[in-house]
Length: 218
Length: 391
Image 1 (cartoon, rainbow over the protein chains, first blue to last red):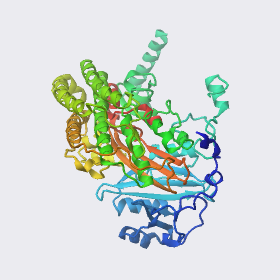
Image 2: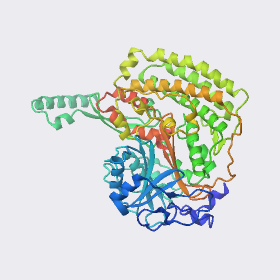
Image 3: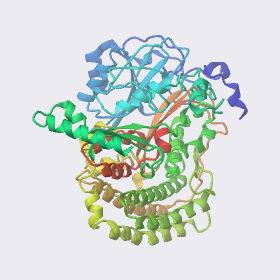
């Protein structure tokens, strides 16, 4: 109980000062762009025993790299799960190639993770599955505040509601989405609750007052 | 009031006469009716609001309005420790709480790179399959009730009660069970657990036949479900639809077989598939799945190994920096957890991939061109739980 209050909403490092360095992985804070391919660039030996992201070597990656070159920033494996980090500009084309050439025909999920300290704070995550290969794959691309991410509704219609939810919760708009509206929260709501700077009991008090006729929903 | 209606009607009929020779889009529009269904409507299984665009009784389009039950589960997760968030997941799909817990615990275990001991895995499989039965029974009862058959509800609730009794004896709760912990199970099985499971399987097998005698060849049931809410296998894949809905459209895909978790590879069971992708086939698939679940429970009880029920898990769960996605086959479809760890005791982000939410999106495709009464049947056949849709 006690340690949940310690954590500031905006950053993991402040509360967990000097816990352990990010284990060779692009996940946490700001990460400058890495050149083509090799995730081996993070040579720092990982402290936690045994687990660290390792480069993902596969003909799939080689094929995609041949096509898109430096747009594919990283190809890594963590705990047996593969993922690609791609350029936001190339995200749509890479995803289309992954669907058409690599047969990833099922888009499991589209979601977003907010890293306020990064230069491009919103990381969009596409989770994919291939029925023919029985294989999962994640693709990630980061966008800046106010920047639009590529919509994949044209590739997988299921992305429609998933992208709407990501917009609803993070305020990231998807370029080319046919119906970019909120989905879970009311249309007039202000603020994006899953951003790290949105407090856990914070709410749009104005909306609550007008629509529910009460001072606070808490 | 009625006069206004009358005059409006006569005006529109005049319009009809005028335009009969050359029907234009404006003429077609004159018959369009917007009908609001829900959020307080018994057939929407909770607080789903569907705005229907109707031409007479024909559905021209739908729009789902959801979020009435939004509790911000994903936000709460970021402010709880890994163990503290565990009970929250039970409140998403509250008729299949065991599956929710199973998916969450396994995802965190994956992140910690540990595995539950074999005995715990078997207990998990038994409870998860019992829960699949309970979920399908509740679905069958309410779905049949929506279409007008009242009796199956009493039958299925009577039999579901036996499952809930087992849950209650095992962990003290009937619905929101919180049965599992990260690393295994908190509780050992109680005295006579195996026998009760065996007896339950023996008790319920003929009951499933009983449901079938009520419905499978019932003329009204067949009329109301055959050919209703058709969706093809390719459309299912494009719309991300999983679970029994996908299988009823002829796609033989079940995560328990495709990417086994919790030791499902050790059990012998079949994946029932349909051919027509309609409401009737989805009914048959779920009935067949109930029988397969019984087979799995039988085997799991027979093979229940000795040993600990909890793996070695540190007192404070603190996964290394990294992220995992773990998907399981919940009664409704693929339930996935995407967890991002920043190396602290609290998850940096948890994303729940809810099967109900994604499957509900296909509603529009399934009811376009059908009748209003079919919308009720199709909402029932997708098997949604609004707690999971809205989270």
